Image 1: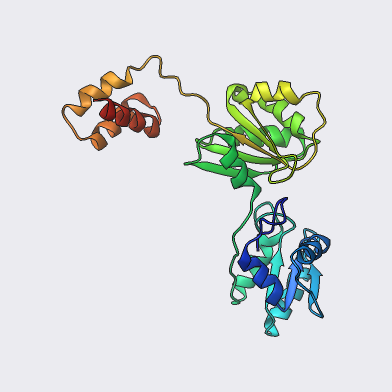
Image 2: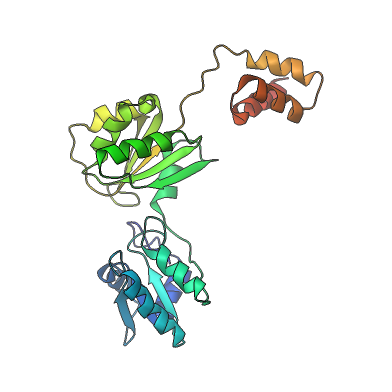
Length: 271
């Protein structure tokens, strides 16, 4: 089940029902889950509250599957956000499903989608990439592969390494991309900084940030100076449907279909 990423009230009624009724509660952090239950007046009683985290391994999963085989309902709660999103719940859900037991998800808070919503960047196509590698060489290769993806990118990073990540991005063509640094989401000191990667790097280079950080990175701005897109579309639309005209101009110019389609729509409204 998803749990709040900051504000304790960002939990669903369904999640509260499950916390109150599950035979066993497995938690990435038992202290966080216990506190969340106390805030919402849910008694644990004599039920089991067990830890399942990155270091639990196969033995931890086997123990939970044994409880399920005994007929017990087990709820897994992430420390914050949605399970399986930068979270150890993936292997647990996989093993339980492969074992033939019912697995379902309770949706709710997640930092990635919250950051995307606040970034001001296109959300029609996005890629969640998680945490960059810590080692410099691996991180630079990882970024090179990631930056080739034609979508808005969402990354997680610790406050201790965000400056280093932005510096690495500034050494690439991505330095002029639009971006947003989203910090302390849903909490009292929530902060969203928007600008180019270079501008954001300059802004926080001497700052010591606190809290969890999501970096949202937009695509490079399209260069259409050498292409008279409206003229090409105008000519094509005289002889074919909008769908065919967009397809033809997209292929001829190499521009993203979305750019061509939006221009065609604008021309239609203006006409």
